[in-house]
Image 1 (tube, rainbow, N blue to C red):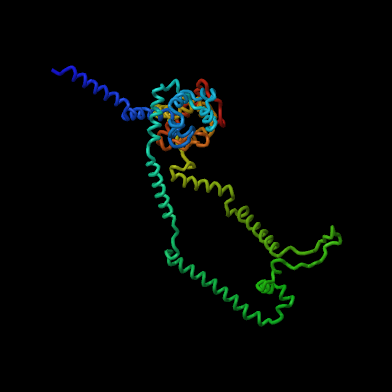
Image 2 (cartoon, rainbow, N blue to C red):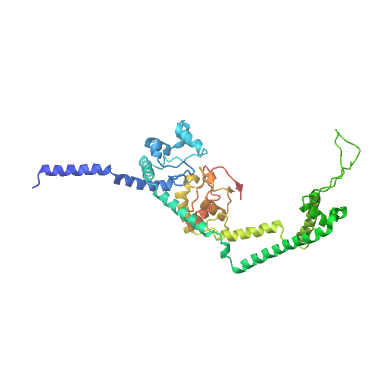
Length: 401
């Protein structure tokens, strides 16, 4: 028979093992797993571990505040703000006085401690993922630069090489002809180039402009008094406007006539409105090729099937209710049951708001967490809430649709 002493020894060892197991990392990991589920269901809409969203980044929050403070804050943050807690008031002021929902009635102390265990586990993770993202981004940037590298001149088609050479030869010949004429005809004229008739001609003005006389550009000062009156010794002279100014004025007249004929008489050119509409259509075509472009034109239809709306309700309760209320009545976020909308009230506008978010107003983008079908389901469900008139609904915001 086995002695009582041996049985007692084995029981003691089992008890000791159980005590060690309770305090072991395995038990802590189980708390973190449970905390992750609670975090994703209640906190992820407004908080991230590494970045400020609606609320602050939660990395190392347990080190900054302590577990007891965090439990009290999560249960009812506004109670601590009203009580004058320095840290609670500072957070409330820093994040635009957006009140954090009170979870004291929906989460137990153990649930909150599990969330803190999850935050602790995530905070202690190495920054390996960040390094991988940085490496990937650098690789993509290198690939983009390589793709945008310009083609070398020598790699152009031979036909383009021939066109460039021909144009250069023609320009060179024109310069040589001008110089030849200058060398032949100017010496033949002798001193007659200084006669007023030649100097006032176009050829003479060009010639003397090449020699440094800028009269062709500035005009000649007449020094003729325009009138007999003067003021403080200042007199008016009857000088012409500079030729360059008059030339530009004449050019604008010719341009205006051509512009009127082109755009308003013959209607061979597109006016600004037509150009804008054409560019909008072109941009829509280009944007449609990029699924992540917020300006891409979409044509989604509202889902009315019971299964789709039930799926949208489930997604809404999991991800949106923390800021908009279980019935869409609005808490931190706006009321979704009335006729007023901040960013458009049709299914396509709501789809884009959910997908890309409104970071400036604290609305996080959901495109990385929800699929296109899920976003369309929750957008359709949100539209189905119109006119439900829940209790304690938030005041209207935005424009009536």
